Length: 195
Image (cartoon, rainbow, N blue to C red; front, top):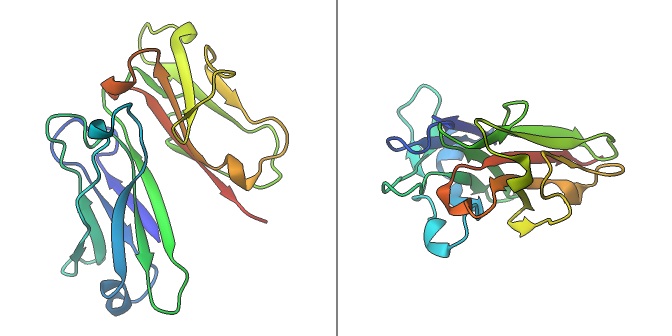
């Protein structure tokens, strides 16, 4: 499956959307059972982590796909990490995720990419973030998959010590202390390919 984000760096404006393209014939893809979801919470309160609308099959496009429109509700509801899961009879379920950030984010990935793909066993892997303005690194706070890591706080880089394992895959988030609900933090998806 392939994830295509439309306006992934402008989540606060309009109704951002994403597409999920299934690597099967259009007839099979149209009959897949596809669900949309929020991959991980990226703000503190359940009311701030609104799930996306159900996917809609777009069978009239040149490249047929499932489309998910994110209703922003004027409330940063389109900010975060979203995905699709497809199930087909006789096949393994497949899921994929992508990131939507604000255009005026306080923190962004230092390489300005929202994902990083590595292999199990790779070494020297790190996730770096930078301030887009005058935010102080001393105020940086880190989470992985919505779990705080105080050992990394006050740093601009999360270094994975030792060889990368499958468990290192996930969503890495860096926000300013006390401002997580502002939806202006940096997000990065680490994808780890198994051996």
